[in-house]
Length: 257
Image 1 (tube, rainbow, N blue to C red):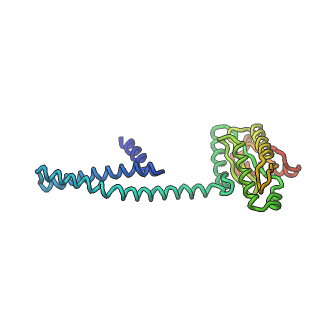
Image 2: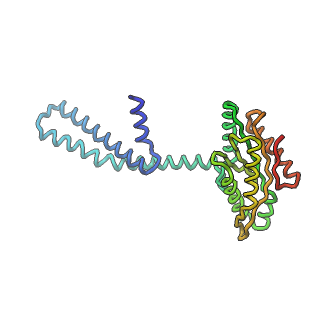
């Protein structure tokens, strides 16, 4: 029973949006009224009040006082709590997100990759990683300027997101490189995913600097099958595969050995 009561209190006092503020304000006001009644009743009994008029006056005051004071105070405090919750959410979002592309940043992506690899090792499924490099992307910055280059990166990130499964994870490795983590995906499935991404980037026709353009990409693909469950090692193997793709002229997919 005690645990149920605590769980219900957590639900009522959990301040995540404006509806929660109103709900919690109602609860705080109700508690204030009940507390006021209890204190007033105890004091009146101790003082020996027995007349009905005294009880009507006492309980009326005990009701009105918290109804006047509690709602505005609780509402103000709870809104402050909501603002703090929103600030914390924003700080957490910024700490794990690349602001330009709205994908996960490298640090958070690798943390997620390590957690997923640990689960994959424990439960016996395969995870694959893709390292994507946009070929000759420097030319976009040189021809159209860095602002256009930033827009192009954001457009490429959106194209990659639209090409992967809902459960896959995309992050920005740095510069014009992106990472994709695909759970329950062996090397063959990951290669097909890489092909889908590569074709989508090439045919995206993103409008950048007033020009419609697609983007060529080199992609290194690696699977966790037969490897240690270490995200950094997986990334190193994907990087080697990507290096081979770039060395062979780019605009291709290479699989880690």
